[in-house]
View 1 (cartoon, rainbow, N blue to C red):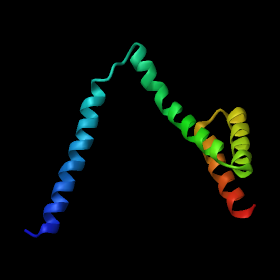
View 2 (view 1 turned 180 degrees about the vertical axis):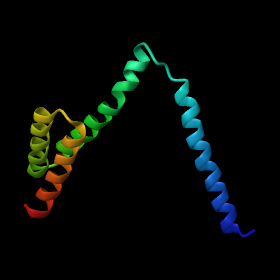
View 3 (view 1 turned 90 degrees about the vertical axis):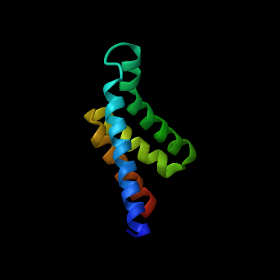
View 4 (view 1 turned 90 degrees about the horizontal axis):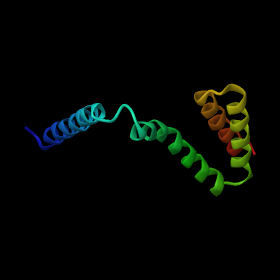
Amino acid sequence: MSKAWLVILGLTAATFAIRLSGVLLGQRLPQHGRWASALRALPGSLIVALVSVSLLSGGPREWAAGGFAAIAAVLTRSLLFTMGVGIVAIWVFRHYF
């Protein structure tokens, strides 16, 4: 067996192990209490952190795109739609303004 196949098989095993460990560890996470509440809030907190860094390090184009996304969030209360509006807005501002 060639070296390339050994690498492919090794990476396949590593990928499977990572995914399996995620499933097994995910079943052990608390379903109630403070830790469960903190884990449920984590994805939103990460999005806010990423957007905050982009806004603070950005210029007027980023602030304008953030404003459009904020308006979309208030009007629709849809995270997916808000993210889409923000992505499209920043793309338009960066490419056309």
